[in-house]
Image 1 (cartoon, helix red, strand yellow):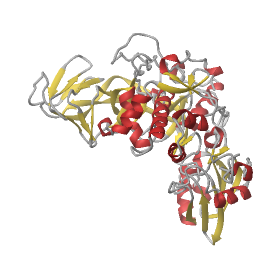
Image 2 (image 1 turned 180 degrees about the vertical axis):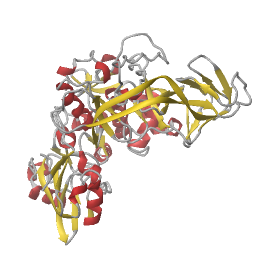
Image 3 (image 1 turned 135 degrees about the horizontal axis):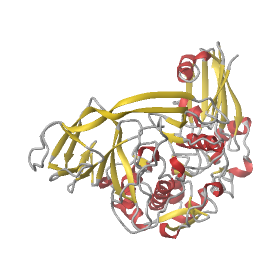
Image 4 (image 1 turned 120 degrees about the vertical axis):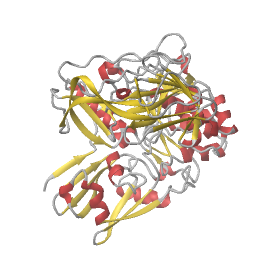
Length: 537
């Protein structure tokens, strides 16, 4: 039988394209709301890894501003409609032309390049998450490759076509000769407000957008300012340059819910702030910091933040959670099912000292589950814990315990894209578990071969499963029952657990220390200068 391994992870480090370190979170300098984006380093002559994109500026501690893509991969055929909530939108092109109107309709046009552009790269992936792609990129860099993480649709790792082979995984070669570039044009006259533009005028990017009355976008209103800029794939992005504290108003209610107790809202605000700083290199290849959907933190209209969310953001203003003077990897999730995961159980690679597996329950009295269920949890222990772990924190979450029934057709379809040779599955077996009992490797044996899903690739393929904390058994020919607990990767703060603890009277510091032991709560301005990549954990 042919064996394939999917979702393999490597040791963790973080390097950005062209030697920019992901941990370079704080950049010294004066306060500017719209710092100029530095130019990306020149690509090697002859071919390029991707379309050239200016790098987004680093986030400054004195005046932190994030570049957040409200929309990515903008391309034909749909026109781009920009509408002001009040007053005019002012668009400024890369050549300084100004166009003002209450609304603008932008279309697309292909223009010839002065010289053809050869794009050539080796590609690893797809990966289930940025985290697994990032570890793969670091491993490849250790072999001497100039590897970057990209998200053309799913997470991938790119390196120049002449790079040495990676230590794990088999890259595919991708090549394309570009003779034209896709540009935006003014599809209709601007109307009131005038300007010097005419219909179908080419708009040289990047484009600056200012909407003093707010820009309407997908049911919300955003204050901006904004940019329309090209990305690494030849398409375009609509980017808001949003102050960090305003960004949190658009994140906290979407991530934990506006009705959470005060201490839980404060914990979420600290973590969202910390996560954004730590992950500002996530979309470096595309010239912005973060996205607005579930591949980052969900960011919506900040005006929707209620009084409780605003109080939580103000109460924690500029506070971040740190380890050794650096922002921590502030991962969080909906429910851990009563047991926290270690970092490696979610994404592999080296562990982090503040993300350890642990039973998430009172440590004394009749509810002290840690004594009854010592870690590591093997298969019998997981089954027993799922049946009798109801005294854990956050047990009222709707997916604290769950069951899913999957048949052979569902499983075959789920793995067909990665392993078409498997065919109709006959066996589904857990190969390895982590200390928290989560499944690290799941083998699916079919008529034509077998495949091993690893780490977050398990949930990426078998999407009906809320977590990897489960046991599985065959209950009928071609039918498997998954019984599990929790919703999400399980590492870091459990939002359900944090809300439970807040209702029990725990404060912000207690909750954060419970889920990230040994970390420190400190002002953003007090963070230490970034460590070299080789020393970062």
